Length: 439
Image (cartoon, rainbow, N blue to C red; front, side, top):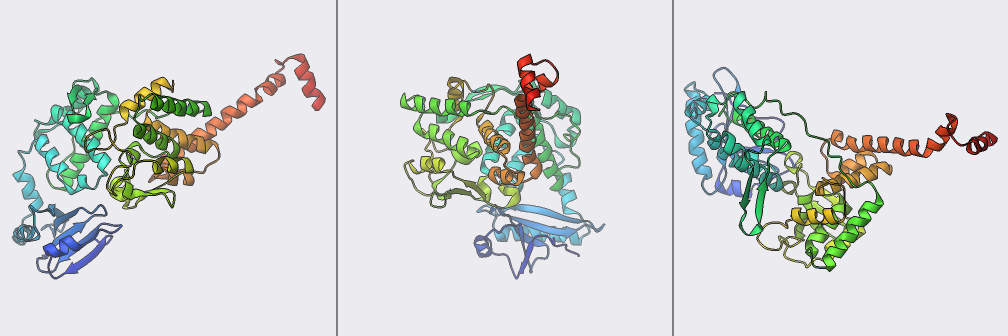
Protein backbone atom coordinates (compact mmCIF):
# COMPACT_ATOMS: atom_id res chain seq x y z
CA UNK A 1 0.00 0.00 0.00
CA UNK A 2 1.34 3.42 -0.96
CA UNK A 3 0.92 6.53 1.12
CA UNK A 4 1.35 10.08 -0.06
CA UNK A 5 2.75 12.86 2.09
CA UNK A 6 2.28 16.51 1.04
CA UNK A 7 5.55 18.28 0.40
CA UNK A 8 4.51 21.91 0.82
CA UNK A 9 3.67 21.70 4.49
CA UNK A 10 5.91 21.03 7.45
CA UNK A 11 6.01 17.26 7.89
CA UNK A 12 7.15 15.27 10.92
CA UNK A 13 7.13 11.53 11.54
CA UNK A 14 7.02 10.21 15.10
CA UNK A 15 6.79 6.67 16.50
CA UNK A 16 3.24 7.13 17.73
CA UNK A 17 0.67 9.91 17.96
CA UNK A 18 -0.45 10.15 21.58
CA UNK A 19 -2.64 12.48 23.62
CA UNK A 20 0.50 14.06 25.07
CA UNK A 21 1.90 14.73 21.59
CA UNK A 22 -1.40 16.21 20.42
CA UNK A 23 -1.67 18.48 23.47
CA UNK A 24 1.93 19.75 23.32
CA UNK A 25 2.19 20.35 19.57
CA UNK A 26 2.09 24.09 18.89
CA UNK A 27 0.84 25.70 15.67
CA UNK A 28 3.27 27.42 13.31
CA UNK A 29 2.83 29.85 10.44
CA UNK A 30 1.94 27.03 8.04
CA UNK A 31 -0.22 23.88 8.19
CA UNK A 32 1.87 21.08 9.69
CA UNK A 33 1.44 17.33 9.41
CA UNK A 34 2.63 14.86 12.01
CA UNK A 35 2.58 11.31 10.71
CA UNK A 36 2.32 8.24 12.86
CA UNK A 37 5.02 5.64 12.21
CA UNK A 38 2.96 2.81 13.68
CA UNK A 39 -0.19 3.13 11.54
CA UNK A 40 0.87 4.18 8.04
CA UNK A 41 -1.23 7.04 6.70
CA UNK A 42 -2.51 8.08 10.12
CA UNK A 43 -1.63 11.69 10.90
CA UNK A 44 -2.37 14.85 12.81
CA UNK A 45 -2.98 18.10 10.90
CA UNK A 46 -2.15 21.25 12.89
CA UNK A 47 -3.42 24.50 11.35
CA UNK A 48 -1.96 27.98 12.05
CA UNK A 49 -5.23 28.78 13.87
CA UNK A 50 -4.46 26.05 16.42
CA UNK A 51 -7.16 23.62 15.19
CA UNK A 52 -5.94 20.02 15.20
CA UNK A 53 -7.55 17.23 13.19
CA UNK A 54 -6.81 13.55 12.73
CA UNK A 55 -6.45 12.49 9.09
CA UNK A 56 -5.79 9.35 7.06
CA UNK A 57 -3.81 9.60 3.81
CA UNK A 58 -3.91 6.84 1.18
CA UNK A 59 -3.89 5.97 -2.50
CA UNK A 60 -6.86 4.40 -4.26
CA UNK A 61 -6.42 1.22 -6.33
CA UNK A 62 -6.29 3.56 -9.36
CA UNK A 63 -3.33 5.44 -7.83
CA UNK A 64 -5.23 8.59 -6.85
CA UNK A 65 -4.04 10.20 -3.62
CA UNK A 66 -6.80 11.04 -1.14
CA UNK A 67 -7.01 12.25 2.43
CA UNK A 68 -9.88 11.44 4.75
CA UNK A 69 -10.57 13.63 7.77
CA UNK A 70 -11.23 11.42 10.77
CA UNK A 71 -12.28 14.32 13.00
CA UNK A 72 -11.12 17.20 15.18
CA UNK A 73 -8.92 16.34 18.13
CA UNK A 74 -11.06 16.81 21.22
CA UNK A 75 -12.20 15.19 24.43
CA UNK A 76 -14.76 13.22 22.42
CA UNK A 77 -12.22 12.02 19.84
CA UNK A 78 -8.97 10.94 21.46
CA UNK A 79 -5.78 9.89 19.73
CA UNK A 80 -6.48 6.24 20.46
CA UNK A 81 -10.03 6.44 19.12
CA UNK A 82 -8.75 8.14 15.95
CA UNK A 83 -6.03 5.48 15.65
CA UNK A 84 -8.67 2.73 15.75
CA UNK A 85 -10.59 4.44 12.94
CA UNK A 86 -7.38 4.88 10.94
CA UNK A 87 -6.67 1.14 11.28
CA UNK A 88 -10.14 0.36 9.93
CA UNK A 89 -9.54 2.72 6.99
CA UNK A 90 -6.16 1.11 6.35
CA UNK A 91 -7.72 -2.35 6.23
CA UNK A 92 -10.25 -1.08 3.70
CA UNK A 93 -7.45 0.29 1.48
CA UNK A 94 -5.49 -2.95 1.75
CA UNK A 95 -8.64 -4.78 0.60
CA UNK A 96 -8.64 -2.63 -2.54
CA UNK A 97 -11.46 -0.33 -1.45
CA UNK A 98 -11.75 3.47 -1.42
CA UNK A 99 -12.95 4.65 2.03
CA UNK A 100 -14.03 8.08 0.83
CA UNK A 101 -16.14 6.59 -1.95
CA UNK A 102 -17.72 4.28 0.60
CA UNK A 103 -18.37 7.23 2.88
CA UNK A 104 -20.21 8.91 0.01
CA UNK A 105 -22.39 5.85 -0.50
CA UNK A 106 -23.15 5.69 3.22
CA UNK A 107 -24.27 9.32 3.16
CA UNK A 108 -26.51 9.22 0.13
CA UNK A 109 -29.41 10.10 2.41
CA UNK A 110 -27.61 13.15 3.82
CA UNK A 111 -29.78 16.28 3.85
CA UNK A 112 -28.52 19.82 3.37
CA UNK A 113 -29.33 20.52 7.03
CA UNK A 114 -27.16 17.59 8.13
CA UNK A 115 -24.38 18.67 5.78
CA UNK A 116 -24.43 22.22 7.14
CA UNK A 117 -24.23 20.88 10.69
CA UNK A 118 -21.18 18.80 9.74
CA UNK A 119 -19.63 21.86 8.10
CA UNK A 120 -20.05 23.94 11.26
CA UNK A 121 -18.21 21.21 13.17
CA UNK A 122 -15.43 20.88 10.59
CA UNK A 123 -11.79 21.93 10.67
CA UNK A 124 -12.45 24.04 7.54
CA UNK A 125 -15.00 26.16 9.41
CA UNK A 126 -12.74 26.36 12.48
CA UNK A 127 -10.02 27.97 10.32
CA UNK A 128 -12.19 31.06 9.85
CA UNK A 129 -11.92 34.16 12.01
CA UNK A 130 -14.37 34.35 14.93
CA UNK A 131 -16.25 37.27 13.37
CA UNK A 132 -16.63 35.39 10.06
CA UNK A 133 -17.90 32.30 11.88
CA UNK A 134 -20.63 34.37 13.55
CA UNK A 135 -21.75 35.84 10.20
CA UNK A 136 -21.72 32.43 8.50
CA UNK A 137 -23.77 30.85 11.29
CA UNK A 138 -26.35 33.58 10.84
CA UNK A 139 -26.56 32.99 7.08
CA UNK A 140 -26.89 29.25 7.59
CA UNK A 141 -29.50 29.47 10.36
CA UNK A 142 -31.63 32.25 8.90
CA UNK A 143 -31.37 31.71 5.15
CA UNK A 144 -29.88 28.39 4.00
CA UNK A 145 -31.65 26.06 6.44
CA UNK A 146 -35.15 27.48 5.78
CA UNK A 147 -34.72 27.34 1.99
CA UNK A 148 -32.57 24.23 1.40
CA UNK A 149 -32.37 22.32 4.70
CA UNK A 150 -34.84 19.54 3.81
CA UNK A 151 -33.31 18.77 0.41
CA UNK A 152 -31.17 15.65 -0.05
CA UNK A 153 -27.62 16.31 -1.23
CA UNK A 154 -27.76 13.64 -3.94
CA UNK A 155 -30.99 15.08 -5.35
CA UNK A 156 -30.13 18.76 -5.01
CA UNK A 157 -30.28 20.63 -8.33
CA UNK A 158 -29.11 23.97 -9.64
CA UNK A 159 -32.76 25.00 -9.90
CA UNK A 160 -33.22 24.30 -6.16
CA UNK A 161 -30.36 26.67 -5.34
CA UNK A 162 -31.70 29.23 -7.82
CA UNK A 163 -35.10 29.16 -6.08
CA UNK A 164 -33.39 29.56 -2.69
CA UNK A 165 -31.53 32.61 -4.01
CA UNK A 166 -34.81 34.14 -5.22
CA UNK A 167 -36.55 33.43 -1.91
CA UNK A 168 -33.80 35.12 0.13
CA UNK A 169 -33.64 38.03 -2.32
CA UNK A 170 -37.42 38.56 -2.15
CA UNK A 171 -37.44 38.62 1.67
CA UNK A 172 -39.15 35.26 2.23
CA UNK A 173 -36.59 34.43 4.94
CA UNK A 174 -37.03 37.80 6.65
CA UNK A 175 -37.58 37.65 10.40
CA UNK A 176 -37.58 39.75 13.54
CA UNK A 177 -36.54 37.70 16.55
CA UNK A 178 -35.26 38.11 20.08
CA UNK A 179 -31.56 37.45 20.68
CA UNK A 180 -31.38 36.89 24.42
CA UNK A 181 -30.39 39.90 26.48
CA UNK A 182 -28.81 41.72 23.54
CA UNK A 183 -32.01 42.88 21.87
CA UNK A 184 -33.45 41.74 18.53
CA UNK A 185 -32.16 40.40 15.24
CA UNK A 186 -33.97 41.99 12.30
CA UNK A 187 -33.28 39.96 9.15
CA UNK A 188 -34.58 41.55 5.94
CA UNK A 189 -33.02 39.49 3.15
CA UNK A 190 -32.39 41.30 -0.13
CA UNK A 191 -30.16 40.74 -3.13
CA UNK A 192 -26.87 41.32 -1.33
CA UNK A 193 -27.84 38.90 1.42
CA UNK A 194 -28.91 36.32 -1.16
CA UNK A 195 -25.57 36.60 -2.98
CA UNK A 196 -23.64 36.14 0.27
CA UNK A 197 -25.73 33.12 1.30
CA UNK A 198 -25.28 31.34 -2.04
CA UNK A 199 -21.54 32.09 -2.04
CA UNK A 200 -21.30 30.47 1.38
CA UNK A 201 -23.30 27.46 0.16
CA UNK A 202 -20.94 27.10 -2.81
CA UNK A 203 -18.02 26.97 -0.39
CA UNK A 204 -19.80 24.39 1.77
CA UNK A 205 -20.45 22.18 -1.27
CA UNK A 206 -16.81 22.49 -2.36
CA UNK A 207 -15.79 21.33 1.11
CA UNK A 208 -18.30 18.47 0.89
CA UNK A 209 -16.77 17.31 -2.41
CA UNK A 210 -13.28 17.44 -0.88
CA UNK A 211 -14.53 15.33 2.02
CA UNK A 212 -16.21 12.77 -0.24
CA UNK A 213 -19.72 13.71 0.85
CA UNK A 214 -20.84 15.09 -2.52
CA UNK A 215 -19.91 14.56 -6.16
CA UNK A 216 -20.87 17.88 -7.70
CA UNK A 217 -21.70 21.46 -6.74
CA UNK A 218 -25.21 22.49 -7.87
CA UNK A 219 -24.59 26.03 -6.58
CA UNK A 220 -21.65 26.62 -8.94
CA UNK A 221 -23.81 27.36 -12.00
CA UNK A 222 -26.23 29.74 -10.27
CA UNK A 223 -25.81 33.31 -11.53
CA UNK A 224 -26.05 35.69 -8.58
CA UNK A 225 -24.70 38.92 -10.09
CA UNK A 226 -22.00 41.04 -8.52
CA UNK A 227 -21.93 43.16 -5.41
CA UNK A 228 -22.30 46.89 -5.78
CA UNK A 229 -19.21 48.97 -5.15
CA UNK A 230 -19.07 50.18 -1.56
CA UNK A 231 -18.46 53.79 -2.50
CA UNK A 232 -20.50 55.59 0.18
CA UNK A 233 -17.73 57.33 2.13
CA UNK A 234 -16.88 60.54 3.95
CA UNK A 235 -15.09 62.77 1.47
CA UNK A 236 -14.58 66.03 3.34
CA UNK A 237 -13.08 67.29 6.57
CA UNK A 238 -16.45 68.91 7.32
CA UNK A 239 -18.16 65.50 7.35
CA UNK A 240 -15.59 64.18 9.82
CA UNK A 241 -16.10 67.28 11.98
CA UNK A 242 -19.85 66.66 12.03
CA UNK A 243 -19.24 63.04 13.00
CA UNK A 244 -16.97 63.87 15.94
CA UNK A 245 -19.13 66.82 17.11
CA UNK A 246 -22.20 64.56 17.09
CA UNK A 247 -20.40 61.88 19.09
CA UNK A 248 -19.33 64.48 21.66
CA UNK A 249 -22.84 65.93 21.90
CA UNK A 250 -24.64 62.59 22.18
CA UNK A 251 -22.16 61.37 24.78
CA UNK A 252 -22.54 64.56 26.85
CA UNK A 253 -26.31 64.16 26.74
CA UNK A 254 -26.04 60.47 27.75
CA UNK A 255 -27.61 59.32 24.48
CA UNK A 256 -24.70 57.06 23.62
CA UNK A 257 -22.46 55.04 25.93
CA UNK A 258 -18.88 56.36 26.16
CA UNK A 259 -17.50 52.93 25.19
CA UNK A 260 -19.60 52.85 21.99
CA UNK A 261 -18.68 56.43 21.09
CA UNK A 262 -14.99 55.72 21.66
CA UNK A 263 -15.09 52.52 19.60
CA UNK A 264 -16.56 54.48 16.67
CA UNK A 265 -13.87 57.15 17.08
CA UNK A 266 -11.11 54.54 16.95
CA UNK A 267 -12.60 52.90 13.84
CA UNK A 268 -12.67 56.29 12.12
CA UNK A 269 -9.08 57.07 13.13
CA UNK A 270 -7.53 53.71 12.25
CA UNK A 271 -9.57 52.31 9.36
CA UNK A 272 -9.88 49.03 11.28
CA UNK A 273 -12.73 46.65 10.58
CA UNK A 274 -15.70 47.01 12.94
CA UNK A 275 -15.21 43.73 14.75
CA UNK A 276 -11.45 44.27 15.08
CA UNK A 277 -12.31 47.15 17.41
CA UNK A 278 -15.65 46.00 18.86
CA UNK A 279 -14.11 42.66 19.92
CA UNK A 280 -10.67 44.09 20.78
CA UNK A 281 -9.15 42.60 23.93
CA UNK A 282 -6.53 44.10 26.23
CA UNK A 283 -4.08 41.28 25.52
CA UNK A 284 -3.86 42.46 21.90
CA UNK A 285 -3.13 46.13 22.70
CA UNK A 286 0.43 47.47 22.93
CA UNK A 287 0.10 51.14 23.85
CA UNK A 288 3.82 51.51 24.41
CA UNK A 289 4.50 50.55 20.80
CA UNK A 290 1.37 52.33 19.60
CA UNK A 291 -0.25 49.35 17.92
CA UNK A 292 -2.78 46.54 18.07
CA UNK A 293 -1.56 43.02 17.26
CA UNK A 294 -4.38 40.61 16.39
CA UNK A 295 -3.48 36.88 16.20
CA UNK A 296 -4.45 34.99 13.02
CA UNK A 297 -7.66 33.62 14.55
CA UNK A 298 -8.89 37.12 15.43
CA UNK A 299 -8.97 38.83 12.03
CA UNK A 300 -10.50 38.24 8.62
CA UNK A 301 -7.50 37.10 6.58
CA UNK A 302 -5.59 35.38 9.39
CA UNK A 303 -6.94 31.90 8.69
CA UNK A 304 -5.51 32.00 5.16
CA UNK A 305 -2.26 33.84 5.81
CA UNK A 306 -1.47 32.46 9.26
CA UNK A 307 -0.08 35.90 10.10
CA UNK A 308 -1.07 38.44 12.77
CA UNK A 309 -2.72 41.72 11.78
CA UNK A 310 -0.93 44.82 13.01
CA UNK A 311 -3.01 48.00 13.32
CA UNK A 312 -1.04 51.18 13.89
CA UNK A 313 -2.52 53.57 16.44
CA UNK A 314 -2.39 57.33 15.80
CA UNK A 315 -1.80 59.28 19.01
CA UNK A 316 -5.49 60.24 19.24
CA UNK A 317 -6.62 56.60 18.93
CA UNK A 318 -4.04 55.43 21.49
CA UNK A 319 -5.28 58.10 23.93
CA UNK A 320 -8.87 56.93 23.51
CA UNK A 321 -7.92 53.33 24.26
CA UNK A 322 -5.73 54.35 27.18
CA UNK A 323 -8.64 56.03 28.97
CA UNK A 324 -10.83 52.88 28.90
CA UNK A 325 -11.16 51.09 32.26
CA UNK A 326 -8.43 48.48 32.06
CA UNK A 327 -9.46 44.87 32.60
CA UNK A 328 -7.97 41.40 32.49
CA UNK A 329 -5.97 40.42 29.38
CA UNK A 330 -8.95 38.54 27.95
CA UNK A 331 -11.45 41.35 28.72
CA UNK A 332 -12.87 43.57 25.97
CA UNK A 333 -11.32 47.04 25.70
CA UNK A 334 -14.71 48.58 24.88
CA UNK A 335 -17.00 47.03 27.46
CA UNK A 336 -20.47 45.89 26.29
CA UNK A 337 -23.56 47.20 28.05
CA UNK A 338 -24.53 43.70 29.09
CA UNK A 339 -24.00 40.11 28.10
CA UNK A 340 -20.83 38.20 27.36
CA UNK A 341 -20.27 39.21 23.73
CA UNK A 342 -18.51 42.14 22.12
CA UNK A 343 -19.99 45.63 22.24
CA UNK A 344 -22.93 46.23 19.86
CA UNK A 345 -22.32 49.20 17.53
CA UNK A 346 -24.98 48.90 14.81
CA UNK A 347 -27.78 50.84 16.53
CA UNK A 348 -25.52 53.54 18.05
CA UNK A 349 -23.97 54.07 14.62
CA UNK A 350 -27.37 54.44 12.93
CA UNK A 351 -28.34 57.11 15.47
CA UNK A 352 -25.03 58.96 15.07
CA UNK A 353 -25.15 58.78 11.28
CA UNK A 354 -28.68 60.23 11.16
CA UNK A 355 -27.98 63.05 13.63
CA UNK A 356 -24.67 64.00 11.99
CA UNK A 357 -26.40 64.04 8.58
CA UNK A 358 -23.76 61.78 7.08
CA UNK A 359 -24.30 60.25 3.61
CA UNK A 360 -27.21 57.84 3.60
CA UNK A 361 -26.09 54.23 3.45
CA UNK A 362 -22.63 54.69 4.92
CA UNK A 363 -21.87 51.98 7.48
CA UNK A 364 -19.04 51.60 9.93
CA UNK A 365 -17.15 49.76 7.20
CA UNK A 366 -17.52 52.93 5.18
CA UNK A 367 -15.26 54.71 7.67
CA UNK A 368 -12.56 52.22 6.68
CA UNK A 369 -13.04 53.05 3.01
CA UNK A 370 -13.16 56.75 3.84
CA UNK A 371 -9.75 56.78 5.53
CA UNK A 372 -8.15 54.72 2.76
CA UNK A 373 -9.63 56.95 0.06
CA UNK A 374 -8.46 60.16 1.73
CA UNK A 375 -4.96 58.75 2.19
CA UNK A 376 -4.87 57.69 -1.46
CA UNK A 377 -5.89 61.19 -2.58
CA UNK A 378 -3.12 62.52 -0.32
CA UNK A 379 -0.55 60.43 -2.17
CA UNK A 380 -0.37 57.15 -0.24
CA UNK A 381 0.86 54.25 -2.36
CA UNK A 382 -0.96 50.95 -2.83
CA UNK A 383 1.59 49.02 -0.77
CA UNK A 384 1.14 51.43 2.15
CA UNK A 385 -2.65 51.13 1.99
CA UNK A 386 -2.39 47.36 1.74
CA UNK A 387 -0.42 47.28 4.99
CA UNK A 388 -2.75 49.74 6.73
CA UNK A 389 -5.91 47.85 5.79
CA UNK A 390 -4.55 44.33 6.24
CA UNK A 391 -5.48 43.29 2.71
CA UNK A 392 -4.18 40.00 1.38
CA UNK A 393 -4.21 40.94 -2.30
CA UNK A 394 -2.99 44.09 -4.03
CA UNK A 395 -6.05 44.04 -6.32
CA UNK A 396 -8.31 44.70 -3.31
CA UNK A 397 -6.33 47.83 -2.46
CA UNK A 398 -6.03 49.09 -6.03
CA UNK A 399 -9.60 50.43 -5.97
CA UNK A 400 -8.49 53.27 -3.69
CA UNK A 401 -5.72 54.24 -6.09
CA UNK A 402 -8.27 54.39 -8.93
CA UNK A 403 -10.53 56.52 -6.73
CA UNK A 404 -7.63 58.88 -5.98
CA UNK A 405 -6.78 59.21 -9.68
CA UNK A 406 -10.41 60.03 -10.50
CA UNK A 407 -10.64 62.51 -7.62
CA UNK A 408 -7.43 64.29 -8.62
CA UNK A 409 -8.72 64.57 -12.19
CA UNK A 410 -11.99 66.00 -10.86
CA UNK A 411 -10.15 68.57 -8.71
CA UNK A 412 -7.86 69.53 -11.58
CA UNK A 413 -10.85 69.98 -13.88
CA UNK A 414 -12.61 72.15 -11.30
CA UNK A 415 -9.52 74.31 -10.80
CA UNK A 416 -9.01 74.74 -14.52
CA UNK A 417 -12.64 75.48 -15.40
CA UNK A 418 -12.27 79.34 -15.49
CA UNK A 419 -9.24 79.04 -17.73
CA UNK A 420 -10.98 76.48 -19.91
CA UNK A 421 -13.94 78.83 -20.25
CA UNK A 422 -11.62 81.61 -21.37
CA UNK A 423 -9.88 79.32 -23.82
CA UNK A 424 -13.22 78.42 -25.36
CA UNK A 425 -14.16 82.10 -25.62
CA UNK A 426 -16.95 81.84 -23.04
CA UNK A 427 -15.23 83.77 -20.26
CA UNK A 428 -15.81 87.44 -19.43
CA UNK A 429 -13.87 89.83 -21.72
CA UNK A 430 -11.85 91.24 -18.84
CA UNK A 431 -10.80 87.77 -17.75
CA UNK A 432 -9.87 86.82 -21.30
CA UNK A 433 -7.89 90.04 -21.72
CA UNK A 434 -6.07 89.44 -18.45
CA UNK A 435 -5.05 85.98 -19.63
CA UNK A 436 -3.89 87.36 -22.97
CA UNK A 437 -1.70 90.01 -21.26
CA UNK A 438 -0.02 87.30 -19.23
CA UNK A 439 0.78 85.48 -22.45
